[in-house]
Image (cartoon, rainbow, N blue to C red; front, side, top):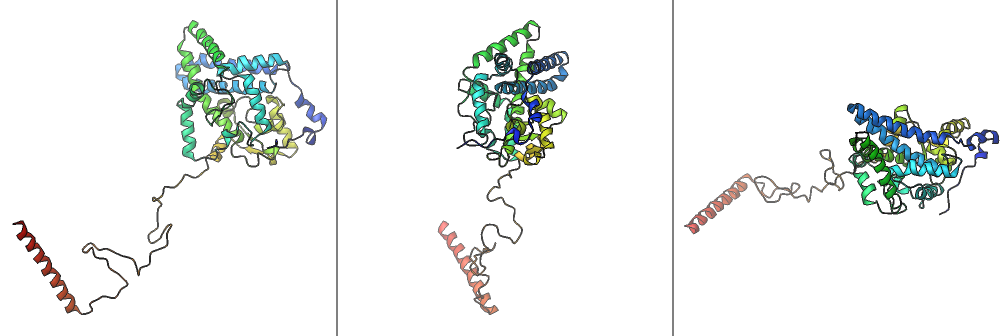
Length: 385
C-alpha cells in the first residue's frame, strides 16, 4: 500500500509564517532533558523526606519516565539539538537507556510509523486497531498496567526479542527492552541504585524508581497511545486526521501528558517541528481555519469514553423478556401447543372440543379410573406379600 498523502506547509502558511517553525534551538532540548531529571530527583527526595507523599511521587516519577520516552522520540526526529552527535547522545543515554529502550532501534521503527500512519504497514497499528473496546476490557488493561503485569511482559517475556518483533497492545512504543538495550539498561539502573545506596536510601530505588516504572509508566504510556490514534476516522487517507490532539489541563500535563505530547495531530502534519513549538503551531492552524478538519478532544477523560464506547455483549438465554412477548422465535400456535397440568401428565389440547359433553358420562369415567387405580394398588400389595 502506498504512503498516505502529506500536508505541505506552504499550502497553509506564507514563507514568513513558516520560518519560525523550521528553526531549532541548540539549548532548549538539553534543558528539557535536565528538567525531566530534575523533576525525578526532586520527587525522589520528597518521597524520602515525607513518606506520606510516596503515592504522589510514584505518579510524578512515572509521568517523567514517560517524559524520557517523549524526549527520546524528540531525539528520533533530531529535535534535541542541531548537533547530531549531541542529539543522539542525549536521546540514547539520558532518555532511552534508563527506561530500557534504544534510540538506534527506535528511530527507523518510528519513521516507518510516520510514513504509513494507520495503514497496514504501520508498526503501531496494533496499538490503536482494537479500539473501541468495552469498559470492562479497558478496565482490565488498566488493571494489568497498575499491577505490573504489563511491565513484566515488556521487561521479562520480551527482553531478548528485537524491537521490530511482533508486538501487541501491551508493548507500547518507547517502553520495550530490546536485545541491544538490555545491558545498558541494567548498567544505568545499577548506577542509579549505587547512588541511592551511597546516600543511605537504597530502598528508594525500588519504591521511587522501579515501582513507578512497573505501574504508572505503563499506564500513562497506554493512555498516550489511545489518545494519539485510537478511534480517529479517516486517519489513513486524510493527513489532517492522521492523529488526535487532546487539550490537556495542568493536572493532565503533570500526570499524563508531559512535554506537549498531547499535540499529536500537529506533530503528524509536520513531524520535524520541535515539540515545544507545537502549541504555537496549533494556534496558527486555528487562525487558518483548519482545526475543524482535525480530531481535537477536550480532554483525556473524553478520549477514554470514546475508546470504551463499545457495548458489552449480551449473554444468550439471559435476555429480559416482557410478559407475553417472544424473543428470537415466533409465538407457538395454540392449536398445536401441548400443555401439562399439575394433576395430570396427559397432554391437553386447549382448542379441541371436550370429548364428553354429558356430565354423567364424565362422572362414570372418573369412577372407572379411580377403581382401576385402587385395583392396581391392591395388586401391588399382593405381589409384595
